[in-house]
Amino acid sequence: MSDLLWPGDARSGDLCTDAAVLTALLRVESAWLGADLSGLAGPDDLPALAVRAEEGGNPVIPLLALLRSRNAPDGLHRGLTSQDVLDTALVLCLREAAKRIRDDLAAQIATLAELADRHRHTDMAGRTLTQHAIPITFGLKVAGWLQGVLDARDLLAAVDLPIQIGGAAGSLAAVVAIEGSPDLAVARVASTAARLGLPLHQPWHTGRAPFTRFGDALVTCTDAWGRIANDVLTLTRPEIGELSLAAVGGSSAMPNKRNPTLAVLVRRAALAGPPLAATLHTAAASMVDERADGAWHVEWATLRTLARRTVAAGSQTADMLAGLRVDEQRMAATLAAARPGIDAEQRKYADAAAALWTTEPSELDSSVKSPSSSPGRVGARDGNHLADQDHDEPPTGGSARQEPYRGATDEIIDAALARAGEK
Image 1 (spheres, one colour):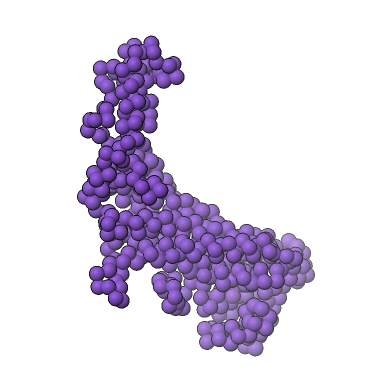
Image 2 (image 1 turned 60 degrees about the vertical axis):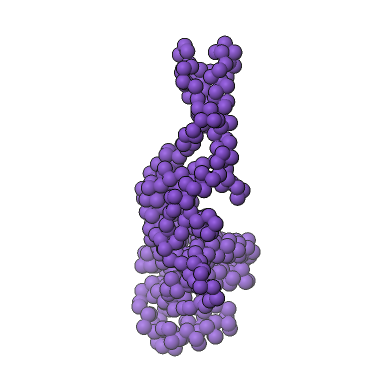
């Protein structure tokens, strides 16, 4: 499969392509029948199947006709409906996509954990609302990226993509009639699920939570990657230059260009993902009766597009992070140029602490006294914490050399690293 208008699509390989869907459809029918049907249809049949799918509104109907014309065993599709086969086939395709994404998430987590630890004391200018805020470290910024990727990992791991078999209207009526009892019908579904390696689940004909949850998990991934790409795009601007990428793109007209192409393409995926997930939710909310007219049909291509784009973006993000270059000197220079303004918050609290130091203990309000203070000590504010301070050691004033103002940076990074080590 190729897509000239989605550069990087080739990274997704054959995932969710027509050929992959056909293979999955054959796997579902084979697992239900207990016979291998894979040799009865193949990629050469795809053009005709695609054309004939319009007649019944889905590709299962012409596929069954093709298989029967090629002497498929008796019992083919008996007890099933088209939705059973197509939904379960899509589940098989999406589970393969999820595996690819999990592998890329693991690579990203390893890279980010190493970066956060290595740069835990690499000072830089923190920015809020596009303006200098307070000093931070690059390690803290990376720890924030890492937390987003870990959220994506955990949500994707929690998503359940089960088998979907319910018969014509979700009651397994035909399967019960064939097998002779509800227990035997459920056992037939369970054995089919086991052959396909899928969790067993009650029929979910018009309850589409498995697909909407999966779509949400994919968008959580692209959200996290987009957040990283946005920072990379900002910090690689020539006038900032605190980051750069090992792999850059050129221009058809300007030989001087060194475009951060991977970051651009990751951001593109992050922008495109949410509307696709919204389509899945719109479809889920529009389900009606025991099989929806149109709402079911709109899911298929939407899931394919979202899955392929997420897989490609995951691979691109892993490569982008692996090639990230940090200019510590440029970060330090930017921070130095932002002074003294960027230290305003630190001076504010230092001045407040100095005022406490010069105040007689009897004049202090009880609310600022340290509960554990001993005679000759008062509760003084140090950064973001109340700490005991001796009277003969006044806090650094605004005119003195600025000390690192890092708050709980090390603790935040350590927490992210600990979480990254969890399986």
